[in-house]
Image (cartoon, rainbow, N blue to C red; front, top):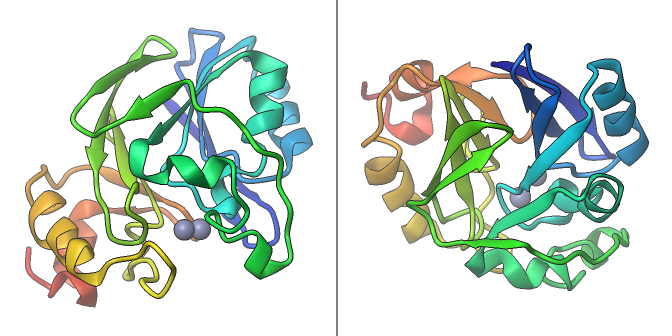
Length: 210
Ligand SMILES: [Zn+2]
Ligand SMILES: [Zn+2]
């Protein structure tokens, strides 16, 4: 499995193109902006079909190019039910507070957490990890965990947004993430890649306990 990371938009959110080398299908995690850049990369990698657009949550910096990518490829947009209003409202997805405007889009698959999606012929498990937003999820595929803004290199996401919840976040970090195996590579929503092992060992928000 190959994962290509592309920093997009003014907040440098990470979009990911995920594909198998021998296949011409991919899924895309968080096409937050810069549709043309994502399109070019897909073309450069010989990707002819994007089956799914997997959104880790509904904030504008993670969903901004979803409408254009869906229109171009016919990919199915997946988002957790609690972040669904963010696809249609600049107030909910916080764009208006940052002076941005992004196109609305329609969800095709509404997630609850606990399901598995067959995307680009790969199994992707959905883990509901609320806290940064109510509908934040992590996607698990092979050795990769796509964390969105739930987990960063030695840090975690903000909890001062409307819809954020510190108590839920605590449960996500202490119980939900702690409950999965440690050998995942963590592809974060902003910044560099890390591993779950390194985070449980040294991330102060995870109490430095492995
Ligand atoms: Zn966010
Ligand atoms: Zn973000």
